Every structure is written in C-alpha cells, then in structure tokens.
Image 1 (cartoon, rainbow over the protein chains, first blue to last red):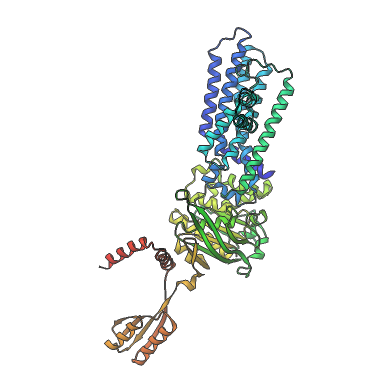
Image 2: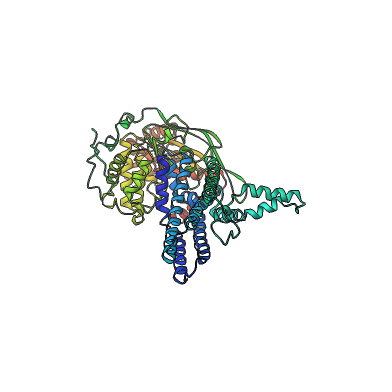
Length: 259
Length: 370
C-alpha cells in the first residue's frame, strides 16, 4: 500500500503541473465566473439553467482533464523511461498501475473540487441560498470521472495515446447515451437479431455514464428522483465496481506487457 | 572501517567524492560480506537467451537477442558492448524482468529476474534517465528510497548522503528541471545506490556528458569496483570499458561475437622482436616476410613484428639467432579495445553481407595512406 501511495504522490505532483490540464481548469473557472457575472438572478427558476450551465462546464472540463491525463499516465512513463527506474525497484506491476491511477484520480478530484467549490460559492453569493442538487451534481461528476479515468488507463496499457483518446471519448459518448443503446437493444421494431444482440452487448459492456448526470436538469428534464441519497449511493457503488473491473482488466494485461 | 553515515563525505562539489572506505559501510553492513570480490559465485547467468520482435512494417520476426549465453561472477565488472541495435538494452531489460524471453533461461543472484527479492538487491541506471522534474534531487532520492520501504528518517539521511556522494550538495534542493544532463546523470547514479545493491546495471552511464562529469562518473565506477560490487556495464566509451572492466563481451546482431578478459583480448597475437647486429640480407628479409612478419632496420637495430602463433614466434626468434642477431626484447603487441571492437563488428558485418560502414572506413584509410 505504501508503494501505491508513494507512486500516487509522484504522479499527482507531476500531473497538477501539466499546463494543458491547468488550461482546462482555468477556462472552466472563467466560464463559471463569467456566467455569474453577466446573469441576473431574479427568480427561483433561474437555478435550473444555472445548475445545467455550471454542472455542464464542470463535467466537460472534467472529461477533458480525465481523458488527457488518463491516456498518458502509463505511456508517458514508458516514453520518458521513468518506468524502468521504478519497475527495477521492488515494485510490482499492479502497484505501479494503481499508483498511477490513484495519482491521476487525485488530480481529477482536486480539479473538480476547485471548480465545484467556486460554483457552489457563486450560487450562494447570487441566490443567498443553497440547493443540495448543486453539490450532489458535483459529487456525481467526480465519480463519473473516476470511471472514465479507469477506462482511459485500461486502454492506455495496450493502445497508443492517440488511439486511446478517440477510444475513451467514444466509450464516454456511448455510455452517456445509455438509454439509447438500451432501447436499440430491446425494442421490438428491430427484426435483425444480430443488430439487437450487437446493441445488447454494447449496452452491457459500455459503462453507463448517463446515470451520473441525473442532477443536470437539461440532460434529464423528466426525471424526478424520490430518494436522492439511495440513488447517489447506488450510482457511486456502480462507479466504484465498474472502475475496479476496468483496473483489474488493466492489471491482467499490464502484467504480461513488455515495457 | 565503516564511515559514519551521519557524517558523509563533504566538499563534493567538484566531482564524485567517495570515502576511502567506500560508502557501503555507511549505509549497511550487509554488502561488506559480499565485497570479497570474485568469490566465484555466479551473479548473472544467461543460457540460450532468445528475444524476438516483429518488424512493424515488414511483419517479419527479428531476433533482437539470438541465443546468447554468459555468466557474470559476483564482484566482476562486466562490459557489455556492441553497436547500436546489437541487443544490449534488450538483454538488460530481460535481466531486469521488464521484458520476457522467448526462450532460454536467466538467473540473477540465483533467482528469476523480476521478483521483488531480486529487485531489492539490484539497481538500474538507464541511458539518459528522466526523473519527475518538479521534484528536487533530494525529493527524488527520497521518492525512490520509499519504494524500498525505508522509513522517513532513513530516507532523508540516505538521500542527504547520496546527494553528497555524487557531488550535488549545493543543488540538492533545486528542482530537477534546472539540472544539466551531467547533473541528472549524477542523480541517476545516486538513485542506483539507494539500496546498497549487489548488482548494478548501467546502460551508457557516461553518454553525452562533458569531460569533467564523464571523469567523475568513471571514477565512481572505479570506486564501485573496489567495493566488490558486480557491475553490468553497457557503454560505447571503449576506453572507459578497457579501464574499468574485468571482462567484456561484444554483441553483433544479437549474438555474442567475442567474450573474454580485457587483458587477454587486448594482447595482440603478434610480438615485436628487437634485435641488434642482425645480418639483414635480402634472403633473410624474404624468409621473414614469408612468415607473415615485417622488418624494419634502423642502424644496428632491427625490429621484426609478426608471429601470430607460437610456431611463428619461435621461427622468427630462431631466424634472428641463426643470422647472428642478439635479442634485445620480445614484446607482445597490444591493441586497444576499440581495435577489437571494430574488428569484431567488421567480421559480423562481412558475415552478414553488409560491409558498408567499414568499406567507407577502408576508403578513408586508403586515401589517408596515399
């Protein structure tokens, strides 16, 4: 465990200094700030559009940060040859991979927490009230990014960062349209069993990223969650379990990989 | 006598500084038992190692390492030589467990490479190492030390000591992004000594360094030799290799073309026979050249160079005696490791039907002679 923590700290230190990630963070913060600066809050219903804008910006920046970070965590170590000095020490390959993942995840957490805090504070400043939906949305975005990072690191152990970028984004887009793939897999209008089976497999394999956007009223205008606590717990557990499966698969592949 | 770890060598700014007793005692007492170098125990054993790669364009399989076998004894400094692409780094990676052989057997300190028990006793310095740039030299040594499970106090002490050892005391707290290549190489050496290793794998440790840094690193390697550590050294700096290595092997296209003790390899097959009062008639000169030797007369002295085998040497000496010559000296000619290296690679290229590089060299030599 100590080895994983050491590697995670090293990874975090390196990742938070990456300029491209900082640019995404700054742009996102600027967008949130500008939105509040030029919007007047007169009525309660304004929170719907505010929530959608804020969570949308945080989610978008989070996706770019997670993907760009995740696809490079392992390849950059190989390219720069730091992996050789690390793996020639008493470090097991799974410890290395977990250290890289958790270091990256810590970076994602810090970025989302920063954006989330700014958003929550600005909502409070403008409306002089708090709404649970704001922080619940931010928390779910973090766990969504945790899942996305695990997908990125899984692909990073066997494809190049360039291919991985498109692969991870595709998985994210497909996973965000889970209700679409589900209906394509189940609706009776589909006569072709191969097509139905294909969408069934896609729906089963691709993680459901859409569930994490529940607090965004523009993405899910019709959904009213009765017990938000239970929904969040279930979604977070889903994210953790799915991430664990991704990481275990990555570890199995990485154990056999030559570096 | 062990040096006190709390008072490491100081004044190390000009170069690599090592204590007269070696730093081993300052870090641990375990290695001193192994520092009775050349104990005869095998540190590294490679048997029929084969590693193949697929050419991404032609899709053909290429043997990067082609059936090599060698032993390195504990306490030995072993030079692993070869032109670029000969299979040196591939072999080192296989020894570290970073890649997996297609066939053959590798043993490091009697165990399979790659397990943590072995990795705790070895270290690796890759060519042109890169480290996390946001860290300082001390941070990075502490970082690597924590991978060995050392506690915080021990990590800090060891980092201070090693930074001092490699001559980075004044730069120890500066971020690595401000370091020159030579300074980074020193950091690389420091990280390779954290665990008081029994075997060190150095891949081009002096590559791209200025002469002062080069000399410092070479001095450190010489010092490691006195400590009885095993060093597996891959380098293109053949003069350094000749100076520090006990044995060398020369690889070409994944095969070991030559292996042996440096002192035996550099001794040429010929002898220089210096004689006086030798009656160098045309008939005698003809006889000498018929034996494949050359004659040079300078006043009363005659220098004969030749006799690649014992019979040839004896025949030349007999000729000198029979013709009234007085032997002044018979000296084996000495070649450099560079001569051996070029000769070996040239042989390999000729065998492979690709004598391009040396054909050019021959042309250049011919032009120079003209």
